[in-house]
Length: 217
Image (cartoon, rainbow, N blue to C red; front, top):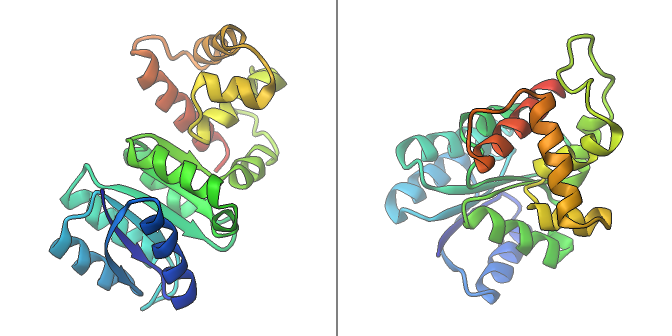
């Protein structure tokens, strides 16, 4: 799998390159800016991009804008956005456009190498990954009067939050110490309460997560 890493912090960038290369990923370029990432993607046509949210030239959402441009040109390109802080609002538009093959992780996650690689593997395979700290902060925001999640029980919200992280029913069950059949019951309850009936299960999972993200903006 061909990967481009983009971060203006040289030590962090080279650290990510070393981690990925050590796991057999083919890192074809490492750059330090949003425009550099777009240009490298045009030249190398990567399967996966790992990019800092804030990079030169503006140090705002240059990484997000670069990933948007790359995925617009090549929709199958997987991407993981990295952030120093929880600032998920700007990244949520990307998830709403197409959450498949997309991740949003805090940079602290890289220190936990196994967690980072798990997220990379999930996104590279076409899944999604959202940092647990991001999900926890979103979930902790006060509910609005028209919150579509208000009908969910606490356990159903727990299950939906783990869906937002990209976990399968088996993965959710392992986190909550519950059987897969029990998790299936909870996920079906989430689908019903969010009125997500007319789609295959995997599509409903994505739509449920998007409902979750919309309600916690």
